Length: 244
Ligand SMILES: C[S@@+](CC[C@H](N)C(=O)[O-])C[C@H]1O[C@@H](n2cnc3c(N)ncnc32)[C@H](O)[C@@H]1O
Image (cartoon, rainbow, N blue to C red; front, side):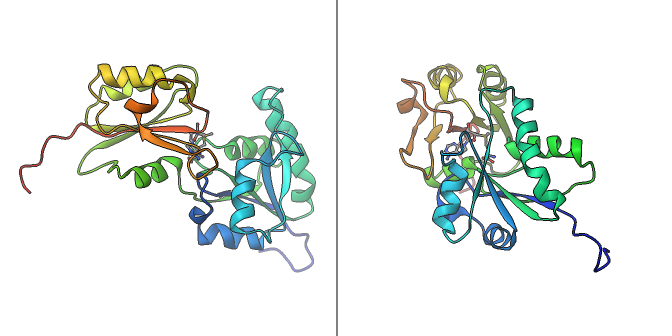
C-alpha cells in the first residue's frame, strides 16, 4: 500500500466501447470513463475523430476526450512506440489514463500493442481492462443468429491478407466461424462458403451501429468487397432436431 506522502502511481485501463451503438457501452465502462484523470481515444490524425471517440461522445458527451495519433504511415511497431511515448508523462505524473477501444480491448485491439510498447518503458505498469461487447455479438443479435448451441465450437479468424484461415475453419462443420478484417475479401469468402455448403444462415454486418451500416445474408452481399469494419458469421451446420 502506498504511504499518503508517496507519489501516486499512474495506471492504465483499456475500456471496450462496443462496436458502434452507444447503447452498448457498459455501466462499468461509463464509471471508469467518468473516474479517469484522462480519457484517450486513438485516431489517425489530431483533427480526425476515431470510431471509439464517436461512440463515447454520444454515450457520455460530458467526458473530455484527448486524441492519440497512431501514424498509419509508420510501421506498426513505430506507430505504437510513438503513441506510447506520448502517454508516458501522464502515467509518470500518477494519472489514471483510460484508453477507449472498439469492441473488446483483449481481442484484436490496438490496446494490447500499446501496453507492450509502454511496458518496454515501464515494466511494472499497472494495467486493467473493461470488457466490451464485440462486433460479432452485435451482429448475431441483430441478425437473429444463434452462434453456438450444445457442444458446438467457435472459430474466430481474420482474413486481412487472404482467406486461407477461413477455408480451414469452415471444414469443421460443428464450428461457428466468425470472420474479422475480411471486408476486402468478401466476394472470395462468399464463394468459399457456397462451395463448402456453408452459405445457409451466414450473415454479413458492416459498420454496425455506425453511419452507413449494412446487414445482409452473405449470399446477397458477396458481389463486391466491403470495408475493413465488416464481420461475417457462419453458423454451424445443424441437423433438424428430432426432440422438439
Ligand atoms: C481491429 S479488430 C477490432 C475488434 C474489436 N476489438 C472487437 O472486440 O470486436 C477490427 C475488426 O472488428 C470487426 N468490427 C469492429 N467493429 C465493427 C463494426 N462496427 N461493424 C462490423 N465489424 C466490426 C471487423 O471485423 C473489423 O475488421
